[in-house]
Amino acid sequence: MRDRYHQPVSETTPSRRGLVRGLIDQVDKLWHEVAKFGVVGAFAFVIDVGLFNLLRFAGGEGPMYDKPLTAKVVSVAVATTFAYFGNRYWTFRHRGRTSFHREYLLFFVLNGVGMAISVACLWISHYLLGFTSALADNISANVIGLGLGTLFRFWSYRRWVFPEDVEAADEAAIATSA
Image (cartoon, rainbow, N blue to C red; front, side, top):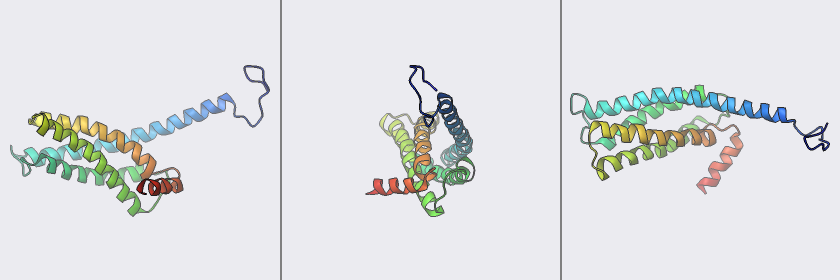
């Protein structure tokens, strides 16, 4: 067998077709994870945004009307709990399993980072820029902040919470904590 430069190719060298097939399989697998992550995220988004607005604006001025950051923290905590179970038992069910406590703790820690991204966007908009309307709060927290936080979450869940290689993930978590 010869390659395009007419050099002999070892029988152990994967063919181009095999490499392309492997790449297609990897993209297909990633696409399925992204799609499932998106469905779980959509439900979590409805929980997050719905609860945030209920706490802020139910009946005109909700119980946390003057506390937009607290309302956001509460709504994210509830949505995060839902998202953990949706992602563990549907999106990433085929990936390595570690202990429930490790996964749940890492999931919440990484969601804390994602929430901090969302809350930072809300803080900048609401307090720094002075955009205090319901629309401005929702755009900053639930469009910009949630979008940036979601990108971080997907990457971090795949890497540390629901890894393909459990031993490598544990080593990475230990290395980053040191």
